[in-house]
Image 1 (tube, rainbow, N blue to C red):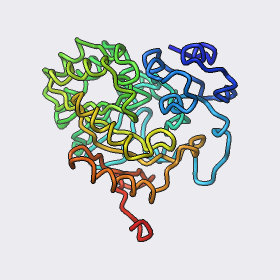
Image 2: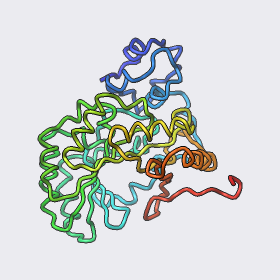
Image 3: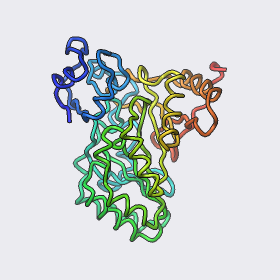
Length: 318
């Protein structure tokens, strides 16, 4: 794991002056060696590097950008449980991530509540609500937990009779695929009565490697449904060629594009914003280049709304 600017600079062949980053931040640099090795050397504007490097732009206060952009805390009835949507509940299974993405919408979330000791109360609330059919494991990153902890949690979830689906959201399989090698867990998931969906978080084709391809083939063999969600990010993937390459490479590795999120307006991430009209133009072009099943749905999350909101063109973008 890389926490040091010096180590990162040595790895990618750039100096601190080239990068112009800022380490006076409460959300420090954290990047797995695997992900760092996918960064193109001697390229300060590399799209992978841009996602993880703390910059001075994060200190700019921008109207409309807040600490809790999607209203998690208002839908947080008990520690570690978020209940926003009909039929689904989200369990903050871990406060850790394998990587610190600068645009993370939970970069200010109070993760002291995301502890194993809070699981039981959250599970009791889920068990008491028969309208909940799906549990989503999120974080942080649930795959930052130990294999034994995840197996214990799965066993408890399977005991709730009205649950039919378990969805796991994780960036670990992309940024640190070796960390996601949990053969006992995958075998337990294969035998589970629950439908298992793994939503990986990948924003650029260069994040995908031979290691991710092997991991995804292993997961597909356990009958896990593999989907991807990405975030539309200025300077990372805000052009149609990059988006098309991402969808094609995901599909080659056995993962179906699912969502492309507009940036959640979290404080410190305004420099990544792509306006809705520009996003629509990009996706209109993407539909012309790809078959429909490779075009993710362009969505945004509006605090207080009971579902993701699809983005449609305004009159001006026609």
